Image (cartoon, rainbow, N blue to C red; front, side, top):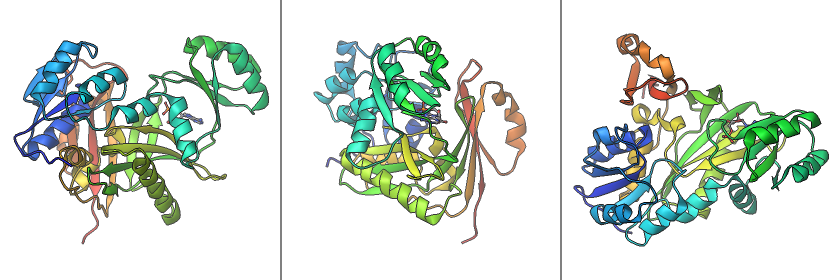
Length: 359
Ligand code: AMP
């Protein structure tokens, strides 16, 4: 375990809002951040000490970046594994390339989860349309076809309701690396944000309930409105996952909850801080971003306790135009990500509203 002193520099791969909020949390603890991102004018570098603009496969630029930072982390999971492997030869990187590799591929992610006894949707690997048709003969409809890699916010997936939908779905995904999942008729989606320190200590935030619009997270409610038993089971599963991949930092585990057995199934894991954890900024003694910085810098983890109710609403596209009205609300904590251009479906900011129970 190596503790980095305040004044050290954290390298962050990716320049989005998650990197921005990580950099703000790092500054609070006295660290500097250096953003590595191909795009100019990104939300993270606006609040960071330094930025490198280069491709993720520019190995000269990566080497120079590694020399200038004391530890590296990432804020999104679609970074090439080879980039993280190259950086690992030069400096400490958390989470590791092994974890990134598992979580980038829905097949290896599900294999890993099932191997450690965590339930997922039933699934099958299919590499061509004929194989897909054969698998679909054996499982019941509806089913979900998903690309193994680079899917997010519902992109890279298609629902197949009957046999005649298969060809259309296959064409839509335009890939030969597909998995088929059984459709889970879930009642609720929740996530658990777990954090593991370099000394192996694990903490989990309260499970949070997530509601989506157009496949994009719209509202998170913490704590999730679930029974004590389900809460305990979700925390236990998230802890088991983070323990079994020798992880350092914040890991997000997304679950489906259904009335049928098993009640909890993991949909996916994200090796990073997450949109469904933004409420922790105002609600918890140490936010998800601060916990991640603490873990990768070798510091003790902070407290995750929360006894009230928090509602986090994303400001997507034109929602950001409501900013002035939101700022007039006494109980609203408003975040603007500094993106200059409004686009439909683009996450522009978020607002958290807290109801705290009196101590
Ligand atoms: P994903 O990209 O895997 O996170 O999926 C995006 C959303 O699609 C999830 O949040 C669910 O609402 C829905 N979804 C994904 N997989 C399934 C499934 N096997 N059964 C039912 N709904 C699903």
